[in-house]
Image (cartoon, rainbow, N blue to C red; front, side):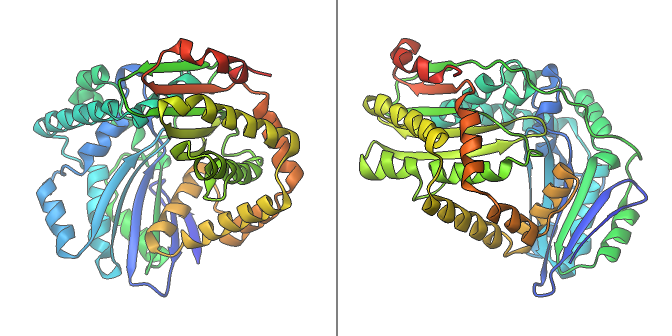
Length: 420
């Protein structure tokens, strides 16, 4: 059973009681991510993600780790472009400990100067590591080309220069502005009851009331058509795609089907034609992302440099075919079956259910039941998929490439990248 409420502190709480498990997963979802940072503080959300588990006024990082180890629990955090999440998963008998730790790191983090400097070094190394990985670099450059000059185009890590500039005072001010109850969702799933969790959270609340979700501006219409980084790599890394719909757009359901048919599974067109039939790439897939006011559909490829032209030709042709002919009845059935199973299989443990209900409440303001989601998927028709594909086909495409070549090597593909 899923229950929601707004606590006296202003925190939105959602719980899902699972009577057949003995575990519980808890998360604080903060509705602020990298797109909400001013340029000079790029990477602040990710910096905070690293710092909060470094200790509180009453517990050191080692004490937190030892307490969780003793009960077999685990904790982690992650930063996205629109939110930051901190979670623990442990036995339900230890729920109190999990709430203690998460509440303390949210409301009374130590933010010690020595921890800030240590994590600054770790993050700078992380930035260098991603820059050294061609696939990561291609993805980061593609996001920047798709949303040029907008915070959605920035990497969540920030830049070396911005991370070096961020001070302890900057971090504290960012925390006090964004980590407020009205910008936070707490989700709990497993062996728990809603009323008990609500009471336990309120007893542990030591924050400042109020706050609000960050104000955001949508990206402008322009994109950078082509971005190439020359690297002496053995493999070419390509990201090729287009802007798509936001997470509130009802076309997201046919887009999910389109994505699976294009490159979302082993039977997808790109996997079959690029890898299985022609052996042109070891790695090829498509993926979608949806934000508050924008979205994207990307094809990601790792291939030998001599195969780049053939692969890009196939990708472009498949996008055009989906727009002109749509999907077959069989492709529609396979995609729906896959999305249905993915939805059901992802709800097999408390951690997955905690993530689903927390993200849904934070990002959509509502929680569709599993049956409601399955009904939306099942209701997708062939003409809806074709219509979405036709819209995407008329939009300007963006490509990033990392490998042993320059921009002039892609001149023959520029017409396919331009808006129709």
